[in-house]
Length: 212
Image 1 (spheres, one colour):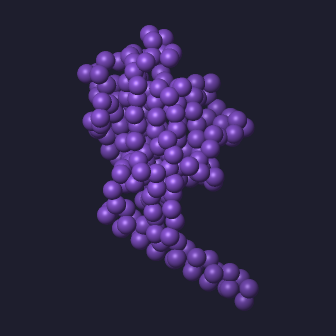
Image 2 (cartoon, rainbow, N blue to C red; image 1 turned 120 degrees about the vertical axis):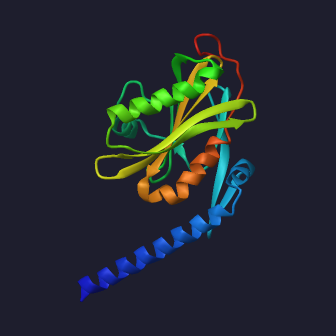
Image 3 (cartoon, helix red, strand yellow; image 1 turned 180 degrees about the vertical axis):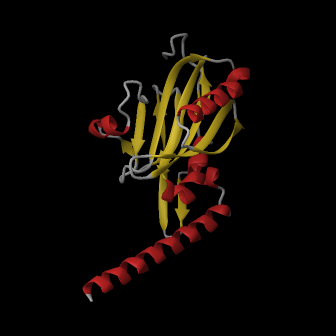
């Protein structure tokens, strides 16, 4: 009986979570997500997510991310981002399942080359990770900033992961950012990720070496 009780409890919990996710998805369809993020607060049914503007590279780049996110601990970085060329900034949720990263790259690209560069990055990723499911790609024109982007689903050790990659020019250098979460979190966090992307602002004060 105890086993059956646990099964019923688990099924009920799953059904409630599924219903909540569906309600939030419908709510997001009728919400100006970008406006809410820029104003600092987004309601998701009975939960309020606060957003704060984070300054990267001494204020050269600014972006709004959830206030609850914090810099990822170094030991977790070594596991999730083992490469020596890991992002310069990695912020993560309390559960560590949702991450925001940013890195100014060595490559110098002209504004008119950004779309082609974004497509090359997307196609290179697809070539070397044949198991990914590419979703969308394109360009966004924001105030005084052009952003190339593509999103996809990749496979981790024991989960599938949703990834939004985006690229923009700071000075003469390409900056690459990403927002990722577990695939099961994607219905809620995909539109929020795009909203955070559209909160990016820059000041072109970098010198030729990519330093302020």
